[in-house]
Image (cartoon, rainbow, N blue to C red; front, side, top):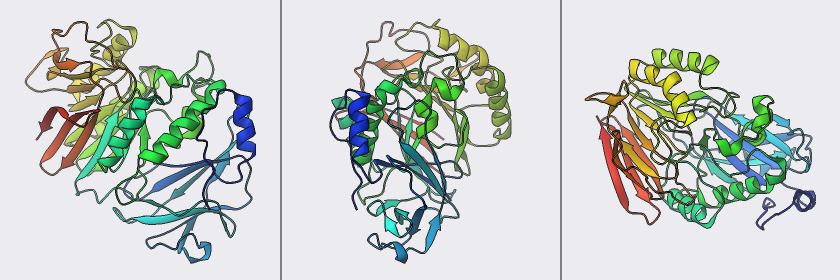
Length: 400
């Protein structure tokens, strides 16, 4: 059974609610990780109605949606976002004890009735195997974002890493239709050549947050309510035995400092012997378009920079400025032979900006070029390739 899809522009919550009310099956099905990305997968889906007995059914063989034929199943949780007028139900189900790198076929069912067509997911391979993923931020739902997600899907990444400013809904309930458009775009474009859905790992950006002074969940209701990633806006994912990804919140729902900085320090200490440490967050410490003294850049340097330097962070993936950039190797806020390279700056769909000061002391390369980063990691090291919207390579850098 095909899921009901919201494929037309929605310009009012009332219209959105009316369309959702006419759907009887999940509106969106998408993948995140709450736990180990090589042995688990979290299936998220939305529905306009509450289902009594929702199950995730999966197997390493196809059964064409025949519910009784799948050998494995899992149950999960359901919640709603307070204040969201269409009242949709968001379901989260985690499949565990998966074989790394295995392709699984799955359906979501209510009792013995399939709610979705059969789809496929694939956890990351064993921790000593090569991995590849794409990274970028500042997306939107504009035509360029559609073209670039299609290009990204054609690269067959194992997951997509999004550094904030995702749908540009600004944490406002009246903009829920933007998330529907964005989720439809991802579902349509972020699929591998062999039909496997591409999971997402997301950091929080300023365009996920509203101006309220409430809890993090109230400030960024869709980010917290739609994407099951373990709760906090900062977390880690162990990608390989020698590679850890650190996701941070650059002051959008929680401060740079305080509990987040304490957590970051302990995380870096725990991974001092990890060969490849990668951080991703939204607002850059070393901006390419904004002023060097921009408030969030200053806050990032004051709270995180000494930790990055002390514990040998290798790469920081930055966003927010709508440009392409690669910094020199930096340590202690100066050019160094060993330290961190900062890659960015978020132009995965939005209109690019110019580089006002291309000769800033820390910039190695920068331009107003829409792009994504293709990241490939194996036993020999890491390779980062910046790919323009036309598919051409605009930069490469490798780390042994």
